[in-house]
Image (cartoon, rainbow, N blue to C red; front, side, top):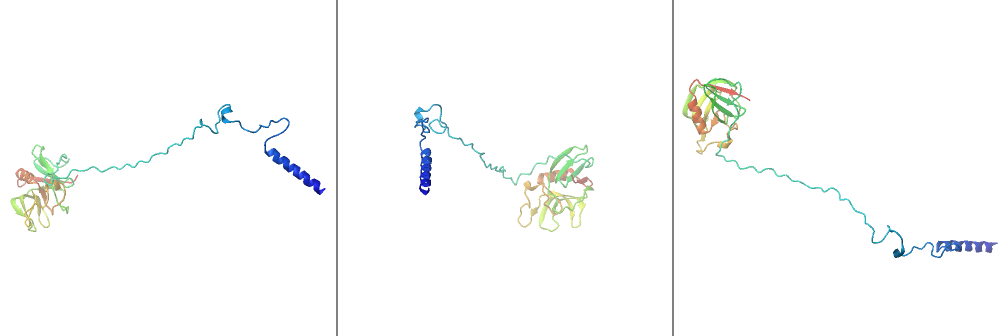
Length: 222
């Protein structure tokens, strides 16, 4: 019995290996399970061959870094004053007068018919000690010296009595130490003074000629 079982096992095992090879049997040709050469196959073989179309890759988004350069500003000429073109503030009085806007650092010379005859930028006080309101010119000096004695000015037109010194309009001060003006024309429009209102020389002359003692000066904030 032990030998027979072993013989059967060997027979079964041999049969399994025979089936695993080329299929055989009375109704199965010997060539069954064997692929013909490529040249003899009908139709397309999508698994191989020269007609195979390789897969394509879709390109991802391209990241482009855009650098925006700031505009190049032309250098400022220190000898050119900026142009003041703001309109005369509403509610700034009537008749022959001078109007000074602290906010805009701008002056308007107005005639008796309420027409603006001249407007320009100035440099008022950096300490902001001038109140708004209507004042009158009370004195004029062709030449004067600053209250601390270190600067000289021309065409002084005073209209407000301050705590340390009177406040008025004049040209750009000149330092007594260097003989040079203490600011440039291009800086007009900025509050830079110790109290008074600085003007370009030609504007200082125009205001000097436009005023007399008693001329109203209207100070506003817009």
